[in-house]
Length: 343
Image 1 (cartoon, rainbow, N blue to C red):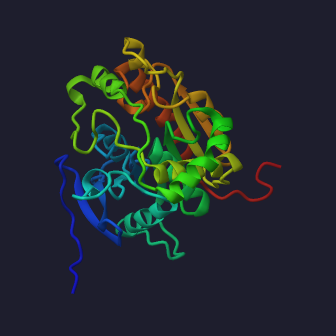
Image 2: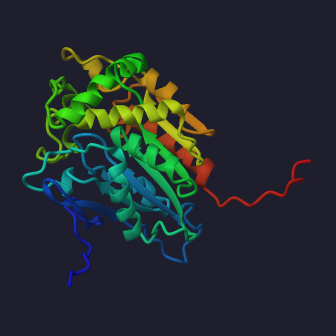
Image 3: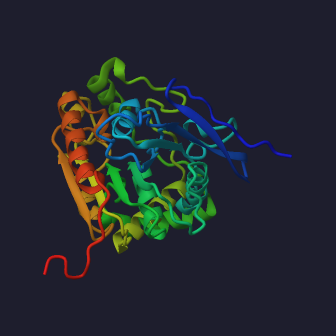
């Protein structure tokens, strides 16, 4: 009989705990995802009551990444929410010996990771109603994954917050359409073929310059240069981008946070510490409008690709913008309106 996994101490220390989520094996062997949590604690006699006490947050990281952002979790728990972060299969805490880091051939496969996380959060996808609201928070590739999931699971999320989501190919939509058939063929014939490395490590350096000793990460889970890119993985990303371009129809309100500008990291300069050196932010801003009917785009001057790892001034603006949107959207439970309320 298989024992039920239990919450264990996490590498981030208190108040974080982690839970291993077994998934179906693949060609590389056993596969798991890992859920990390930080629960809000509120004494019942204190007033006022926290504004987000009925909210569960699920965060998903980006490419070559894992969850380590203590301050982001604290933002949510300080307001009464329960914060959960998911290290997807073959990333971070979920990476096992012999596995190809970050490899996936179809982004829909992550539906299993998300379903397992939601079940562990007490939110099984069985059609039942939940008293607690669900907020999805995704960074970069995680923003793409959660956007696709929210679009295909209407009514499950109450809000979607995206931190520099990878919604469009860096070389433009026109280039994506042109190269997609070739990449798709390559993915079918040689799915694990490696593609050229274009990361010189400048983004990691920019984060260190911006955060100093505060940037405490594990290099085996978040390397100086990004992991090797394989053809099937890139094809999965391009398929995701094409779905975004057609419109996802997300029913929940969406907030997209982006840097005010991009910079091409061909050589090091201090300018790289105040720009997104990964994505073309103007293209992402346009693509975000295809996510649903209620979309807010927040441009943060001086922000990095991960806006919450920027220099203090840009980071403060990012949290201010986030808080303004969150409190306006989720700060209080909304009352149903009758048809003639404002006649």
